[in-house]
Image (tube, rainbow, N blue to C red; front, side):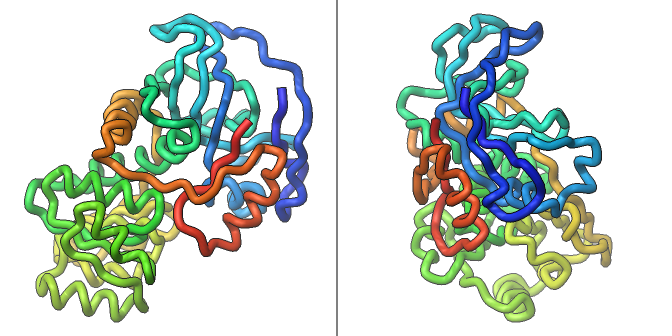
Amino acid sequence: MRALEVTSFGAPDVLRLVERPDPRPRSGTVRVRIHATAVNPVDWWVRRGTMADRTPHLSFPFTLGFDIAGTVLDSADGFTAGQRVVGLYPWFVEGTGQGTNSEIIHADPRWLAPLPDAVDWATAATVPLNSLTARQSLDLLGLAPGATVLITGASGAVGSFAAQLAVADGAEVLAVASSGDEAYVSSLGVEHVLSRDEPHRLVEAIRKATPHGVDRVFDAALIGTPLLGAVRDGGGFVSAVEAVAPAPERGVTVVGVHAKPNSAQLADVIGRVAARDLHTRVAEVLPIAQGAQAHRRVEEGGFRGKLVLTF
């Protein structure tokens, strides 16, 4: 099988495409042949060594990748050989350095959900990590119908899922869109779309719309502490990355989210994607041999949607 390996911490050119033996069947898991996997910011953070403190026992070479979009090779635990599946690989929890940048992986069946035929491989690869981060963040916020929630980064993969899911949950959503992406965010069902601006100006705009502050904030754009002023006293704040979550004040509850595999939640989301009730964007699809190029482009930014690698 092919695998895109990280040979040392550093720039994208530390990535190498290699041939490795196909993994053998293993008790308690099913093997999945990966057809597509997204490149997420966390991938290049790990590759650069930014998150080395979370992986002290990791040795080189290793493979990255969180998003599973592929075909089951073994009939077991409710899945049949040849079945299309989508799933979230808990890369940090597993700690083996064997992610979805490998052509064949071992997966716990509890990580997986059936993939409807209506969803192509590339689209499916954009769903697991991003949608589960969004869903579980909203759950942490404990949104009640009619509650006001501010979602930053609503043009991005995580934020756009959060905006759509919050609207479906019955919340009143204020969403921050990148410049030029306001129409897209509005098309997701969001009534209050704010253009990205300096944090203090953004807080002023939010306070103008909701003088007492919003009930909840999901900070997918990682603005952090400057955004806390947008939340009412006693409200809630969830950061997509715990390390940049602000210190609590005024009774505001502040937590970071760590997305976990959840087959029921993923089955619900991918079903809504298949029905076109939820939308996701693919910026470009590249073969796994161009993995270094994909990482370079993700670091540079400036595109809309996810970059997807295919085998």
